[in-house]
Image (cartoon, rainbow, N blue to C red):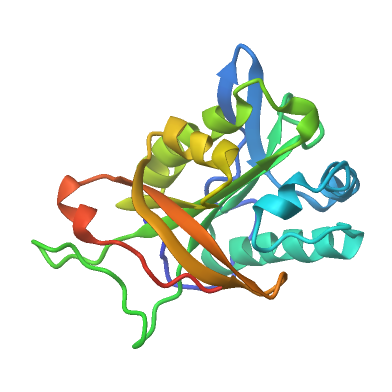
Length: 226
């Protein structure tokens, strides 16, 4: 399966990568598609403190029901458009409450931002960025790192055929960077200053990456726009 099929109209019943996936059994951890029923718990968790807001370029604080509604709607719209789910809830039971979030983001290419190709074969590359957050009530258990590695190895590379998988973090966000490292990624870009619109200031980010073929390590993404 590839991650970039022709866009059309798909149903959630026929979509790929919906889950539930078993990340591990000791402790129990699963990934399954985010649902609108997750909204109350998502709002509750993201208002416990400002950790996700401080560590993300996009999340707001206070986090409102409308924010969650919009984010999950976009996740569902992606399924309808391409027939592949790219957003999952972390759960300690396959059908239990959400305790965290994981997603894959695929760039949209155009003349200004062409799709990268393999430097030797010229084959178009499938590239994704991963994102994740975890409830502060469940930190310190290794959940984020386990999900990160599963997302990279089992879903992005094995199920979706990705050639390169990246994670972006603020330079000073060491917990997020540790998750990227424990997910099997290596530091690719040590520092780049970009504008964070929600803050109206420039912040330094770094990127980590896994390359299925070492020959693609020369391909470094430099244009990040939030």
